[in-house]
Length: 144
Image (cartoon, rainbow, N blue to C red; front, top):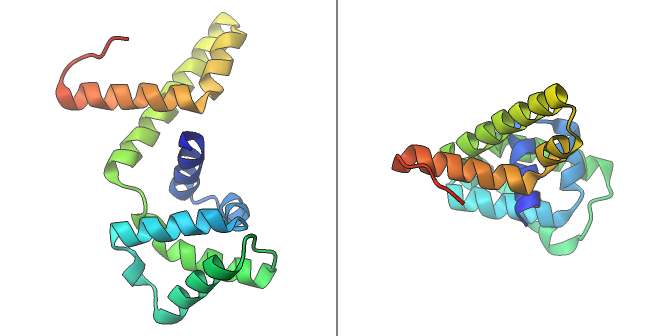
């Protein structure tokens, strides 16, 4: 679940429309975006017709195959994107990207395949970013 969450948050943050479009073909992802928009209070940015389109799609389909419907859903989701990520999640993603870049630089410098694999491990990056943010907020270094 963590990997899916990280991937979705990164797509939203980057605004990668092609990947976001591919993600929307699975209705589970659309359901996640709708519930997140409801929790964040962003759902009200949509007009009634757009809400009906999303709700009807979620209730009736498992996978979106129609190009027209997919383009419509993408336009609807684009209205919500800027407010779907919290400040904490933005910090988390920034820490993950910084750590990944440091690991990749170190892997090239030392010619280490294990460091390269570690830089590609999203769960490791997620955990380390959380520890880093917690240590910044609490003012302590967390050892494991």
